[in-house]
Structures are given as C-alpha cells and as structure tokens.
Length: 233
Image (cartoon, rainbow, N blue to C red; front, side, top):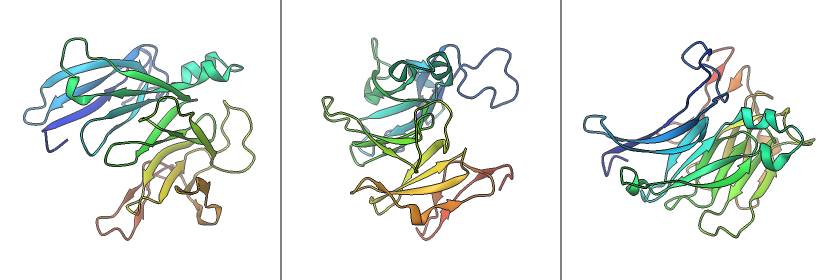
C-alpha cells in the first residue's frame, strides 16, 4: 500500500524437517499469520493469526479489504472423502485494524487448496480464487455473506476432488476487467475465463513447456509474461 506506506505478507510455518527455501509448500502444521510492515523501515506494525499455509495475499485498491488464501494440503489429505472438511478458507481482514488489540480475521470456507486470487477493484468484490484441489475457480461475493459461492470448472472432465487434473494455481485479472487468466501447474497450461459470462475460453488455452506460475502483464499492456518451472524460463 504505497499510499499509506504499508506492506502485507503471509507467514507460513512448514514442517520442521522440511528442507530448502520453499520447504514443503502447503504442508504447514501450525497456523500462519498475516503481517503488516511499515514501508519506511520494514518494522512490524502488527500481525493477525490466520490458518495454516497462507498462500496469496491481496489488498483492494481502496485499501479497505485484505484477503489471504490458504494452500492447505494437510487439510485436504486428512479428509479425502469429506469435501466440506477438506476445503480451506479465505481470510478477510480490515487492514486498518492490524496492530490494534483484538484485531482478527473472518474466514470464508472456499475450496480445496485455495491459492491464487484476483480482486474486482476498487473494493475487492467479487473475489476470484483458484481451487487447486477441485480444478475450479471460486467466485465469492465479499459484500454479501449470504450469497452462495459460485464455481466454474477450468476444463472438461472435472470429477471429485483431491487429485487434480489441471491444478489451477495462480490467477490474474487482465486490465480490460473482462478476462481472468488462470495458470494450472498440473496440466501445464494457461487458461482464460470470460468474467461477464463466467465461462472458460477453451480456444485461447496456452500450453506451456513447464509448470506455469504467476503471470503478469507487460507495462504497455501488450504482452502476457508467464514464468515456468522445469524448464525454468
């Protein structure tokens, strides 16, 4: 938040035996935090407890809503036959309260191994969430808690949950506000969803050599840049 000079990060606590800087992503055994930092010196202003394995963290343009996903693979593996229990949540916070005594997040049960997110700006709702363990995109109306979550399958042949065919991992809303970009690390492709009709545009799917992660749009808006792993490119 460059206007207010704050940054927000998610802290995850992996297994003690995990090795490497990325450790065992999604395998945290303890609850994580969302932390608020002062951009002037990176001092910690405050922190709020969230659930295990926080993944993506987004701030709305108006600065009034902060959300964090939870890539909780442990919850999914512990509940292989119970979808409701296998689903992880989205933490919703008022960033202005982080640092105040008693500040807390509210949680919206969303989908199995929720990870990448994209916000409708400026207020952040509806929120689009990639559901790695269900091969779907969840659409959450954060302004109306009574509105059911909508789900859009990212490709054909989606059945059940737990062993994804596609593994949607990251999400990006294009500048036109009409298109959602979804990178899937299992099927190694990048897919596009038409936001107004909530349908996948299968003819625009891009196949990648490696697993695609968080895409970005070039400064002039003319190119989509997609980082991949194995090969690292």
